[in-house]
Length: 298
Picture 1 (cartoon, helix red, strand yellow):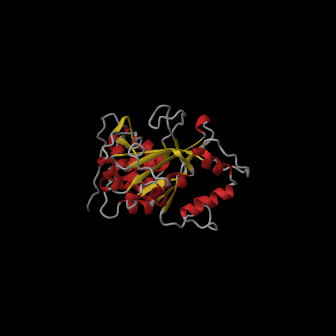
Picture 2 (cartoon, rainbow, N blue to C red; picture 1 turned 135 degrees about the vertical axis):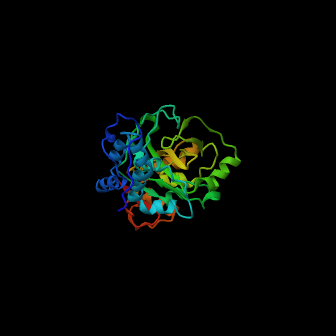
Picture 3 (cartoon, rainbow, N blue to C red; picture 1 turned 45 degrees about the vertical axis):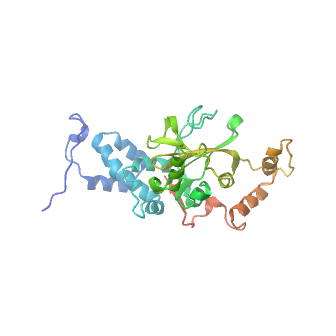
């Protein structure tokens, strides 16, 4: 009879988990029955060093594969191993909005605390619209903006996050390095603690980003870390029900003012025409059959 490999906690002699042997298969079955609950996995990781190692290596990996199976298969295809060893960071990125602080990464005047997002959608199509034309062959998954409304002078703020496939070999990384873009002097990625590059400073934020995000063109900024995690902020353009367009004396803002004063249906039609989306189709948040989209429920 072949006995399964047993493990003991290596944290300290006083740990409660030293009372008896532990088996990975048993723990795997327990968390499978719990549907890989992320809060329980995080609590489990705090018990001791061995539990934390097991969660990083196995539990967070199973959580990611269960919540976003197609996205995980794509990220690991073509021999990509960029997410190996970073499953906890990726799991956190799937379900956690990092928020923003005053004078922090985004140099914003608003304070938005980080929070869990219980339902979100990651889209490869949205990610493509955030890439410059010369980098459109890169694969980037980005979630729909997490909306934080009525943030004072900042208006309606949208926070979004995403991940590159095979970022070390991506064209975006090559462009950033060729332009000698410096790292952010103080802030790091909230998901993996790696250093960050500013896409705005690299001047590679395309106009299609504001169209796809439904945001003001000059109010979009996003960063990418060394591990390919992307996080950004934008000021969302409100969809007004008023049909009276009020032109601005400033010619640079006439088009924005008119867009904001158009009926919601006209704004959506204009956006759909720019993106090549059928007007008769269902709204983007309900298109669950698109192979480039991945919906995540916690």
